[in-house]
Length: 113
Ligand SMILES: [Zn+2]
Image (cartoon, rainbow, N blue to C red; front, side, top):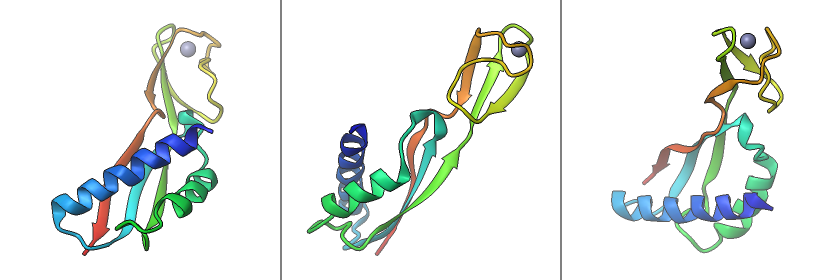
């Protein structure tokens, strides 16, 4: 499961950020996940509960923000938001697509004290 490794990096990053900001504990991680990544919030929460034990993230919760998949078609030059991670223009069916958003896996902010 690739969620395990991204969740592991997430916990490591939060511990580093906690140290850097002098937080004793973190209570919220605001995470933006692009829909194109295919990462499941449930799986991330599952691994997070396991990996955060005994760290400064122990009491933290992840707040998920889903970033939609936005594309620009190089054929008709129009932008669309698509539901499925399939790079096909819904307006003209072309496959010459540029992905604008949807690949994010970003910690937007960390709340702690
Ligand atoms: Zn198009």
